[in-house]
Image (cartoon, rainbow, N blue to C red):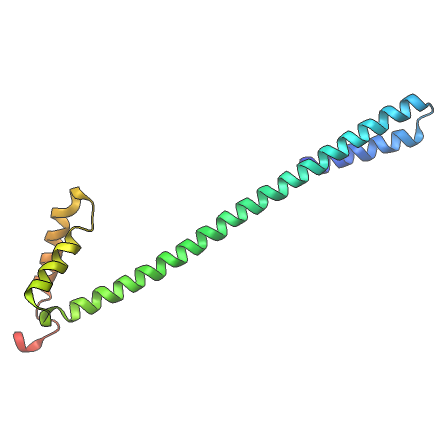
Length: 134
């Protein structure tokens, strides 16, 4: 049970005690307790609502970010495929610039390994797009 519901239940119980109590002092004491618990219930409910809003907003933002990342990855894959399809028709200086840029995208420790992978890929697929060069 949520805290604010517990506070509301206790406040209702003290309200009933205030209505049925024989003396004014007891009635005032129970009414004060009822008011105090009702105030706490309101505060707890506001906090619970704000927490739920914050959690849901974070989840929505995460999902939106994942969708954007997937879209960007798709765009980058398409651009990369387009570059590879046109690789043999690109000037050698542009090929070197693209190779150097792609090789430096990874972390510093992975740069040499990445450059090797790119070089092997390009060598393996060098005739895929231009059958005249076989």
